[in-house]
Image (cartoon, rainbow, N blue to C red; front, side):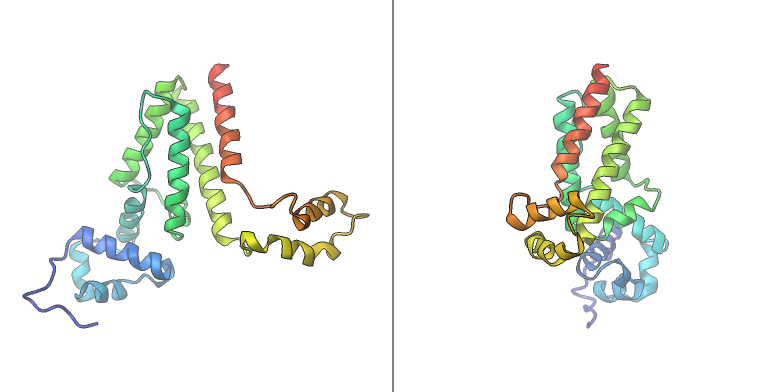
Length: 218
């Protein structure tokens, strides 16, 4: 793409570099994000990027922190269960908007300001509710395991929700009732519409929150 002229060029900043990189990852996937392509998008030579990001790892850490900044931070001192539910739903929705981010968050040590604020508020919310720091640490990690694991499965599952019944019909001959009685029954429930078969994020979330509530009461 042509470079902007000196008179119209938008000043290059770290924020602009990171937000452009995040947009590229959203549109084309993380594998397509390179320093060369990023430089083309902002209209500079690739080496100019290193005035704003130290290296590719710094770039990845920066765009992860931008994603985390979009997640609602739980309030401290109020209804902890509602706050953690809102946090989880916001995180799930945010990660769906940025499909590349879940794997990146789970595979890096993230110490950006948004991530630190997010974790500190989460711990603060749980500790204010009466959990010990040890319990709070286990609690938010259990919740995040559900958020990240569910999101990864949802993003990578090969069927759309409207394809479940047709797929169940196709696979039913491979699941004879005499050999797999319980799977056969469940598959027929999906075929007839008695059960949609689609994984439910809220179901697992409420199980976790109810379990944490019992832990707190004990």
